[in-house]
Amino acid sequence: MSLAAAAAAVKSLKHSSVISWKTTGKLQQTVANCIERTGPGLHSGVISTVKILPAAARVGRCFIFRSNVIPASIDHAVKESPLCTTLSSGGYSVQTVEHLLSALEAFGVDNCRIEIQSSGDCDTSVEVPIFDGSAREWAEAIGQAGLKVAVDSVGQSCEKLAPHLDEPVHVLKNDSFVAAFPYSCVNITYGIDYPQAPTIGRQWFSSTLLDESFYSEAIASSRTFCIYEEVEHLRSLGLIKGGSTETAIVCSMSKGWLNPPLRYDDEPCRHKVLDLIGDFSLLAQEGNQGLLVAHIVAYKGGHSLHTEFVRRLSGTSEKKENSFLG
Image (tube, rainbow, N blue to C red):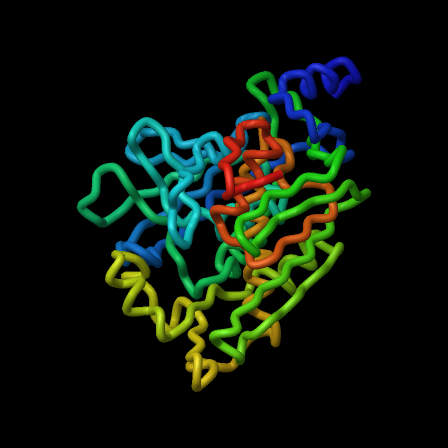
C-alpha cells in the first residue's frame, strides 16, 4: 500500500476525538479455508451451525443470518443484552457473539463472513454456539484453517491499522469501571470481586503478551462461570436455557466449585479478559484492528460496560446522568 493510499484509509475511518488510527506494519488477513462448527446456544439452548468464510480486504467481520447482513461493529451492538453481547440490524439479531469475536480478533482474522443457521423456530434471532463456555473451539478451528492475506476486488492487499488512545478515558457505573490510558502496546488489567462466593473472591489478571500464542495458551480456554444459587433466577428470566456443567464452571456460595478442576487458578478473571477482547473487537472498522492500543484497566465489568466504553471511544456514546460517567 502506498503512503497516499494509507492516508486515504485513515481518513475514511470514523472520527473520534480520543483515538488515532496508526499502521500495525501488517496486512489485513482473512481465513484461508472455511470453518464450520455446530452446537447449542447458552441462553436459547437452540442448536445452530456457524460457517466462517473468507472475505475481501476492508470488508471487516459480518454475520449473515437469513440473507441479512449484521456487521460486527459497535453501531450494531444492542445496549440492553443481559449476560452476553448481541448484534442487531434490520430487525434481525445474533446473540452471544463475544467468544467467537474474541478469537477472531486475537488471531487477526480481520475480514470474514460468518454465516449462521438455526434449528429453532425464531425467524429473527439466532445464537452462536457456546461449546465448553470458552473460546478454545474457535481458536483451534482458526488455527487449523489458517490465514491468508485479504485482497480487494482488484487483487490489492490493504495495510492493517490499529486504534491508539490519545488521552485517558473511562466509564463508570456504581463501583464498576473500565478505564484506559495511553500506552505503547496493548496491556489489559482486569479485576473481579465476588464476596458472596469466597472461593472466587477477588482476583486480578494483567498481561501485555496478548499475541496469538499467548491468547491460545492463557486466555482462549478460560470458561464462563456462574454462581449456583443464581441459576434458577436466571432461568426464570429466560436465560441460560442451554447452560450446564459442560458449558460453564459453576461455583456454590458455600461449597465452592461444583465441577472442578479449573484450568487456571484465576480462570474466572481470565474469562473476563476473553470477553473484553471480544467486546472491544467491535471498535474495528473496515478490516482494521479493534482491540485498543492502550493500558486498559477494568474492575467488575461486564458486556454492557465494555460496549459502553467502546461507544465512548467511537464517539457514539450517550452519557447517562448518574450512570455512566467519563
